[in-house]
Image (spheres, helix red, strand yellow):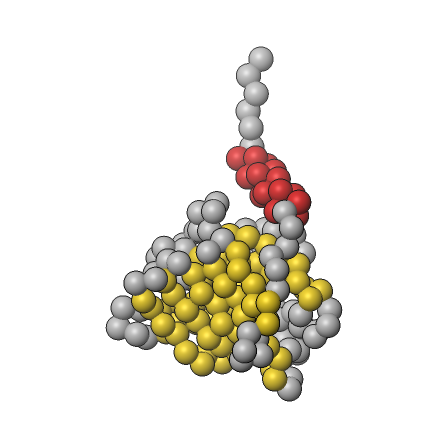
Length: 183
């Protein structure tokens, strides 16, 4: 008897198993910086954030010279997550967009879904050590494709990076993580 496996079912099972393993790992330690940011390190990435009125300011870095992404509060894998993803070109031009996890392992620009782009770029830098994006976004933009961030509450964070300068290429299995932190 030959067994025929559906590749989508196998992929979904692999994503679920990876999420379960990630949930078993202890969350990264949150530190306070001298500039008033909360800071975590995971998979050679750093994420820093602070609240300023009704805005949240973020600095995210990766060890690669490609795209960098941070997601907030997924429902399952990437589905339902509010993403900010971007990269810095060799000439210094920064591309950054507000995306939504519209499928288990996919995201689409909010504007393509009928929403708004609510990310404000502050800076971006490409160095021999990797990529840095510094941006702001509203705590609650009112856009149906943005998840509100509430200070003092726990939020699930997705971090990932890739080696290409685009917003659609995949990341490797060791280039992504998720964890819960008090925002």
